[in-house]
Image (cartoon, rainbow, N blue to C red; front, side):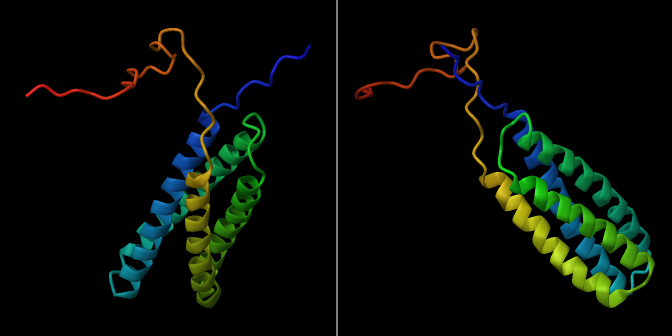
Length: 156
């Protein structure tokens, strides 16, 4: 008789959510820094560059998280492919910025922010696997107090 399959771990999906949220915040900040530069605050260009490097680091971390969701987490394949595409887009965006190809840079930037936000929504829509029961976690192993059954009376 075979044993039932082990539950998928929760932490890879939580890591994917953290990296996707961080990347989305950085992408919105990137657009704000670009707008600030275009408004004449030329010091924002250096911050725009630094934020781009931070985005590149986070998107690689998200790629690792997406791989972990797929492999040990037995999750769907789409986070891995979409994050791989986002990684290529971020690298291309940095290259277009350094090449001063403004038309490509702005267009790719709009598409990149849209893709990051879609990946964020997708990461948060994936259901978390059930938590493992713990020996010290209460009557049902959840660590929560039991819900009352039946009507609850209130004394006045």
